[in-house]
Image (tube, rainbow, N blue to C red; front, top):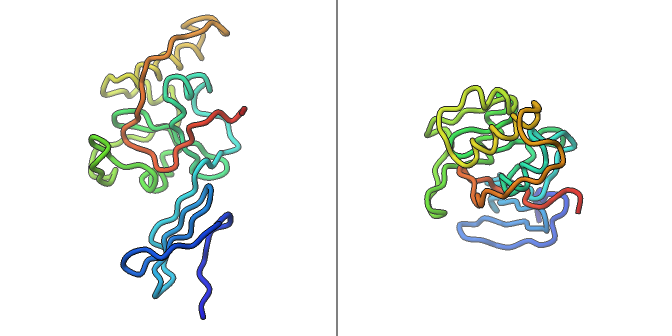
Length: 179
């Protein structure tokens, strides 16, 4: 008999196809090869970093629909459609492990197959914009407001109706932390 390496929080174990074992929990998912104990995939959901968000929370939740992910306990990554993210550039490998190019919610391919920029902060991202999208417009507004150029603090802003980020995020956080 062998012991397999399940993530903390695992609540059940399933046998999948091709001798893959699935360890599943409320916030964790791990795929392991039954014959070797090799980890095929490791996912944690609703993970929160104990760090300041890259832009004001109102923009993260209202304009980006809360599509943000924690790279670790101290680092956020904010995907900005269509071709960039705000995260530490030295964490590119981690960002690429969580994001993929998605077309029509059906087809996906690795992020490194296309041009994808990672900027250390919102100001640098805005200074280097190559395209225009609802996300880039919201990012520009967030930077202007932070700098004091847009609406006065506390004044309400409208929701832009943006519903999906591309590249897509595996395990993206979509709930407010103050709930």
